[in-house]
Each structure stands twice: as structure tokens, then as C-alpha cells.
Image 1 (tube, helix red, strand yellow):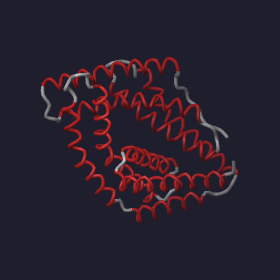
Image 2 (cartoon, one colour):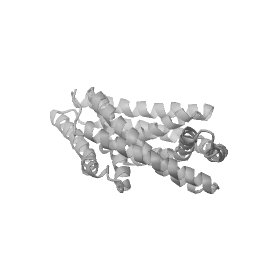
Image 3 (spheres, rainbow, N blue to C red):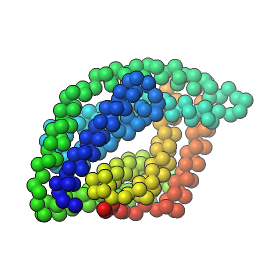
Amino acid sequence: MEPNEIMGRSREVIRAQWHELLRLRSEVLKTSDPEAIHDLRVASRRLRAAVGLFEPWIPSKSAVLLKKRSRKLTRLLGGLRNIDEAILFFQAHTPTGSGGGYQICRILSEIRPGELARIEKGLKAFDVRQLDRKVRKATAGLGKVPITGSEGGRLSAYFSDSGIRLFQPIHDLLPLATTLEQRVSRHLLRIAIKKWRYFLEIVAQVLGADAAPILEQLKEYQTTLGRMNDVAVFGGVCSNLDLSRHERRFVEAALQAEDVLLLQKLAELIEQKPLTYTFPLA
């Protein structure tokens, strides 16, 4: 594929991510739908990943501001997402005929409107016009790549090197992930897999390649590791709530049981579907 076609597709990827982020922002402001909130958070990460990948060809100030604002948006949405997921978790794990868990869900539901109001304020303050100008500058910068054969080789090498660099932490952390005490390693593995997945999604679009098999595999890992991270987050959220001793025991037991099941699932996943380095080609 010629360099001008690669960079043309790269521009379209960034523009598409930006427009999707704007669409989801509008949807969240209109509906406050939990799924839209989650999707907006993912869109902010994908935009940041795309800008980061093509940063060598983007004006520095534009790249820095876009990454900073998209990261701020990701963090803004995190608290409400954690509350919603915690409510669903404890509703699903409440013992039949027991009041345990209902107090937790009630308290979390009472916290939600305040968190939602904070998000709405942040989304309204999100400077769409300024960031749209930065996106235009960023994508204009991608059009300044010299159209030469040697540049095409440099682009291919850059993509390949980026993929190897992003996979290296996964390679290093996988052997540690199934050890019970290695919570930090699993947390870092989750982040590394997420970054590699976004990279592969972008490169597959740019090169017109089929990365569906590895992306589906990474999604399985990300789901399991993400749920393990949720368990830790739920514990932190509940530690700040005014709960009875009975409910605290319920919380601890439910989270511990879920952690054990997820660790077993992760071990099976690593054994049955081991991750190996791959690079999508057209």
C-alpha cells in the first residue's frame, strides 16, 4: 500500500474516532444511558490511542492537547461506570431470601445522581470547538508525509516496531498473571492488552487487514481481566460506604468468590488460548 493511501486512511481513522466521541457525548447528555457512558469512555481511549500512534506526524501541541483532554474525559466517566457495574454485581449476587446487598444497592443508587450531575457538567464544559480545530490540525499533519518508496518502508517498520513494543509487556506479564498474589501484574497486563488491542484495531483499518481472530481473543482476555479489576474497585467503593457488619461480610465473601472464579477462568484462557505476537497484513 502506498504511503499516501496509508496516511489518508490514518486521517479517516482519527476523524471517525472523533466523530464517534462527539456522537456519544451528545447521547449521554440526552439520555444518561449507562451503555452510552461506557461506549463514550471507550471512544475517548480509542481516540487517544490513534493520536498516540500517529503522533510523529501530528503537530506537537495538537497531539498533547488531544491526549490530555481525552484522558480527562476517560477519568470523568469512570466513577459512574463503577457505580453502575457495582449495582449490577451486588444485585446478581444477593442471596435469595436475604437482605444482604440491598442496602449496598440502595446507597449506590443514591450516590449515582450526584455522580451523573458531575459528568453532565464536565461534558458541557468539554470544549468541542477548540478540540475540533486540534483534530483538523492533527489530520492535516498526516497529509504532509513525503510520498516516496523509502517513506513507505519507514511507515511499515514504524507500525511493526510499535506492535512489538506494545506486545512486550504482555509477553513479560503473562507468566505471572495466574499467581494469586500477583494482582499488580494482572492490572498491568489488563492495560497492556487493552493498548495492544486498540493498536491492532487501528492498524487493521489503516492497512485494510483482517485482525478479527486476534481481536476476538484479546476481547476474551480483556473481559476477564477487566472483571478482576472491577472486583478490586468494588471493594474500594464499598469500603467507603456505611454498611453493617453483616453486609461487609457479604461484600467480602461475594468479591472473594468472584475473584477465585475469575482467576481460574484466566488460567484456563492462558492455557487454552495462549497469546502470541501477530501483526495484521492486508
